[in-house]
Length: 484
Length: 130
Image 1 (cartoon, one colour):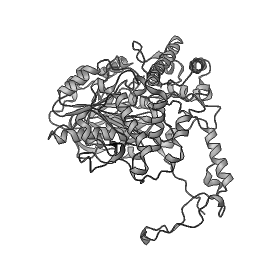
Image 2 (cartoon, rainbow over the protein chains, first blue to last red; image 1 turned 120 degrees about the vertical axis):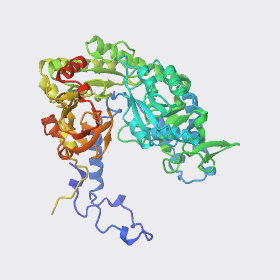
Image 3 (cartoon, rainbow over the protein chains, first blue to last red; image 1 turned 90 degrees about the vertical axis):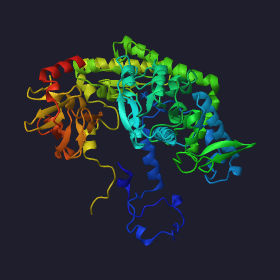
Image 4 (tube, rainbow over the protein chains, first blue to last red; image 1 turned 45 degrees about the horizontal axis):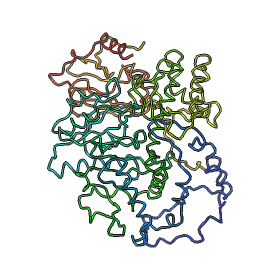
């Protein structure tokens, strides 16, 4: 039941309501609302019950294994939350002058420094508020770089076909034309196709490494050489940074600009829409274009750098300093781990993925790239199961919910038919991985014995299979009061 | 086995093209493509008058599973689009070679339909992809 449907005229949560209506004398009459907003009128207890019940229906990392590939749904340590919620952080006004913000600025400055070391980049800006915004900032900097050199013909962005859909979207938003580069049968970028594609119009390439097919591109040095020799720049999509944390650095692979998803790799809350944080890091030749603000050390004090200090910056992406609450959580996470801990993140994320892959493979599931070692995630294709039992990847995903597991990513990347992209993360125990593998084996047995059970799953959840086709064709996004 | 009419030409990226015999040709996606994509929920068509080169991405079909670009099989100018698809994308699922047509091109003089796959060639390409 929607909270709107519980609404009764005049019912109020008096204790929560403001005493007086705020005055808005500056608002022109034409912009003032003439009818009341359609807000639910409920008691405080009704609101509490409604949202508590909704939260109990959630599949969340705090309640379930959540192996959503390329999303890095890992545990968010409680310590990060409680320290970032200290009153000195929470109560700081975003417009407070630097003299009153030295503690918070010190944390942000150290986070910038730390991310530089982890990624091997020359400078970092924490401004972007999400991964996709970090991508946009990255490609805008590539554009600014070429334009500053008078190299205006470089308007083509190369994007491998395995890339996240946000890559070509960001490139187009920044005014580039996108050229797709195929992936070879072994999962690496097709080098011959890349060589044929580069030229005087090449602005750069957007690469995820390890890629979305769950393997580390072994030719990264050759790719960097080909693109750089053609005058293009390399952009690193940090979606899969978790796999290589503390092991190998994008800066050392030859990338000129990168974004990081702190809500993935640095364990800040993720899923449910954010807020996220997508800092960008650059090599020295791109530093002037970084989005503002940056935190700098000025003698013994910290202060912000804005457009005045950085006239070539691509500008601001958010109000104030970005999603500072999230940046603080990431900073605390990094400090709790230390360098040694970060190395273990990469090792355990990779070990867990390869362990689960080996178990599923032994049980007869088909890996998409059988000859390759997995990175922190891997793909199995259920093509055979779909053909033999008439039970597809989506049916497996829905049935997993009945077994108490959030489904892995389904039908992505698009190049592998009937695929599940599985990322267990370093947070999980061996027992959980074993239980997931057992569930997959059970579901396949059901698919053979009683396919209808799998095709109609889930059976145990508050809602059954949704009609996603009807939902997409007949959009119904906003509640409307019933006609009188 | 999917339906591959013999009077059409095909691409490996699963477009079909029908020679309308008067210097124009009609383009859509194959029965195999609609089946692989599943129920379509959105179609974006090219603009009338738009000039297309071979393999230019010129339309988008979206299902609940995936969004896919549609490529021009040959060069030409868009002279008509199937506007019904905007409100009824399911026409592609129900009748990929008929009511589910996507757009019509006036072919450039050097456009060569014969260079594309015929029904046998496309059927073989499907078998290889499997």
